[in-house]
Image (cartoon, rainbow, N blue to C red; front, side, top):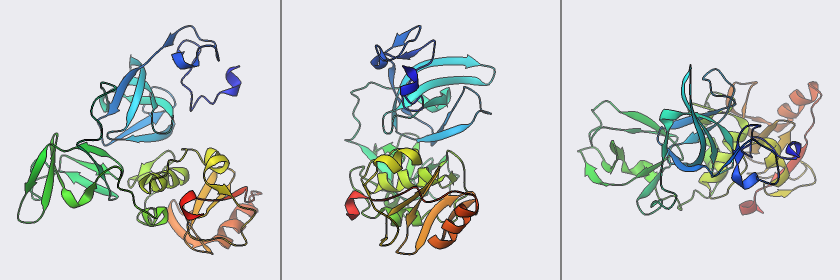
Length: 296
């Protein structure tokens, strides 16, 4: 029966599986999993416990997950996890994950990064070398406030972040296309989900999430369930999604497509007609067109 369950969205192997799947699949052992949280700016989720394994997606700081197994390998400590946001399953570096109480306070002091990238400074002073960079969508916990002669800061565990780069998690950007436009020029990275590197479906998912709409991670799942299906490309508008097998882009307007793609090797804007022609030359046609709920 396991062939009916997507292993990217269901945590199961022959030897170990999520207890919620008991009765649906066979495994040597079922476990409940432990509640955890991402404590690194980005946590890569790989297909196997190795830094050389394929990157399937990235989890952002503050993202919640379940930890089913932690193992020591020649390539360090890895945790087998499933993300709460989109259900994605993979192996994350152990140092990027911390166990956390499932009912721990999540929202009261949480703030979300609202710019493509900001810095965590050791103290409220832009002249101090940053501790790390934080990607759009990352969550931090507010512990206080600070300021220097340049800006106001939010104090968080480990340092300070410029206040104007943060906002409440439930305060959404209304236009997913405006979010995606901020990533134009970002390098293309299969499995990436930040300004350091992003892929087509990661861009769509992040843009939707920042606009208050949950979206699947993979373009195939987005094509099946995200928004409302349209009959064709004759009356496209800003924010419509155009799909090909294994690819997706957002319409900037009625004729231009914004997408992270391996042709330009970055997030780019180009006439939809050019994209259609390029895919057609490879034998791939538009497979779906969908309109997001907030645009319907």
